[in-house]
Length: 187
Ligand SMILES: [Cu+2]
Image (cartoon, rainbow, N blue to C red):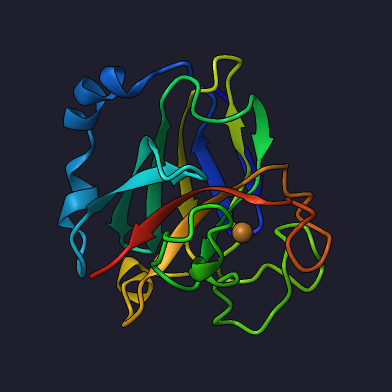
């Protein structure tokens, strides 16, 4: 467990060995404030890989100042190490080989990519996800750059995990490589 603060975004908890089975108890312990905040209700989406196989679940919780994103990846789901994560423009995780239907990063603010970039971040930027040696991950990410209601616009949005870490600096995607997993957000 560690804590790291970046521009406008904080990793609340990261790195874990927990598989999907282990999350049932902790979900019941979620603070009531997440569910009580105004606007959209929490939602949970399947996280699918390039083969279209479900490798985990992603919960999106409306917070008073943004969105709390809980990511749970089953063992064997992803390659170990750091992976860039972003919110992409369209809630379409079909075309799983490349997830191109998810579109580019959400960019409501007309700035550039990168939590560490002097002219960033853009709306869809998020911290990296650390995947354990067994290929599992459990983390909570938080952004105050967008609300869950804004993510649930007409065409939705998508949480995307990339092959490589995001250097939070390179344009336009932090050199994070191919799209490895996707979880759609719809109304
Ligand atoms: Cu991305």
